[in-house]
Image 1 (cartoon, rainbow, N blue to C red):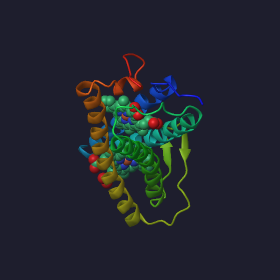
Image 2: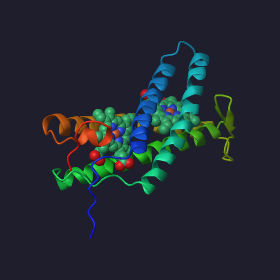
Image 3: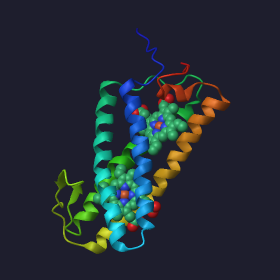
Length: 185
Ligand code: HEM
Ligand code: HEM
């Protein structure tokens, strides 16, 4: 019988977690900036960055999931109630699902306009062989925008939960994802 005594995520898991968090916030702010652009053309130029960054986020999340198989998370904090563990696991699963499905849906929607995704001119993802149907593309983008709002709600919940555990319960939850401080097992 061996016991898993790890109390923190691996260094690479931490780097990927905070990188993804920053990229997702930037991605949201790009969409907000595009919506507030003075003209359609200006909005389109800003949105091209959103499309490209979406491809990057998809790739980083894929790397995170492969690394997660190779280096699984540490065992859960023992002081957390079973419902808290289940809820946290559901939210984490939802993050990965959103961050893979949202860019894929964006790619499919853009493909209904026959448009490829240019990743800052470095390379291109061609339009997928889907029927040309901009009306359907608009619907997918609407759902994508609504998912974006749902994702933001989950992020706020997730961050508040981490802070509540760390500051009010003093159980060191946040330090599981940081290279300093004292996580408790
Ligand atoms: C866009 C923002 C964020 C996303 C998408 C995100 C996503 C995730 C995911 C998917 C996990 C599970 C890791 C795994 O098991 O593979 C996780 C864990 C964690 N996140 Fe975030 N996160 C975000 C922002 C934040 C913020 C702002 C904080 C702190 C205030 C935070 C603190 C934590 C902590 C402490 C854990 C470890 C939980 C545990 O002990 O199991 N995250 N995050
Ligand atoms: C993980 C990657 C992505 C995330 C987290 C994300 C997130 C978001 C968010 C938060 C919004 C704004 C919602 C609002 O304020 O109404 C949005 C809008 C939008 N995104 Fe993304 N996005 C991603 C990838 C993509 C990709 C790859 C494409 C296209 C190829 C795309 C196309 C769009 C479009 C066209 C809108 C405007 C939708 C509307 O009509 O409301 N996104 N996205």
